[in-house]
Length: 338
Image (cartoon, rainbow, N blue to C red; front, side, top):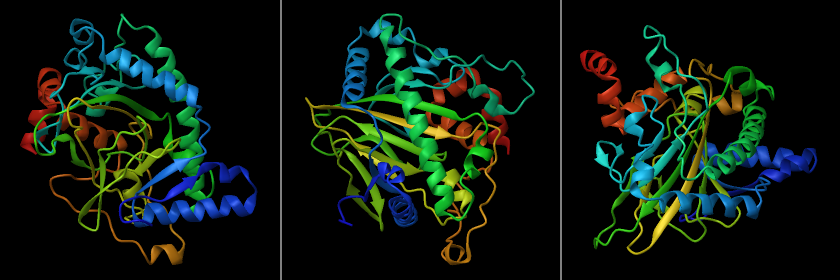
């Protein structure tokens, strides 16, 4: 494995007979035990779908400011919709990007006495000036949901569990798609497109505009580049899978460095996570794997919760303080008092 790159895995091996499928599972287990990141090819996503998604992203960000602000996330208690440049934070620092957040299309839960994470459930905000965006995003979501399920079944077998292990414990998946634009910066030094962080859930499939760098992954205390590979997704695991394997699989810090003006960069992460009320039980690993368990990362500033909704809510309240203060002041007060 190159010090400046990540392993490349081919998902189509799972459909090429028992020997090829076993090789893929071994590679998957090694990549996520050692690094937590890899490139994934063979997903069946067509160049046409990629091109339509990229065009839809460019069209959205080219809309007049008034059209984008009409669906600004400050109007959504569920953290959906458009975030203007500088409207999101990582580790308390401003991220230099704009984006639209799209989750499962559901009715809001009116029960004020329920768990706080129920407030993440609700409708999306779609731009009236671009009705075609919903169609391409829906197609993207449905295809990547199939890819994610296939990966999780392979992981289950690779970890010594039965193939349907994650299916049984996921419930109704909580997905999130972010369509992100990193505008170029003309500062002489690298800028924070998105700051160093670990994803709060289980699995992320990241599509990056061809030829656009900027993603960096932390390995052995050093930041290494993870440039896009044609036809591939960048895949990483989140904190919940680290928790479920007690650190056998590792969630890894990553960040994005802003491009230099006049360049820009489009990326589309797809987060595939369990139902908000789901708790992934700790997986009973085979003896040969259990001997390599490292324990869950102990960071008092970033506790990892067993229930996915708690982890997701933690992340959203931190990332969007303006939305949190407008709609969820009671949750912020309760956390400050605890």
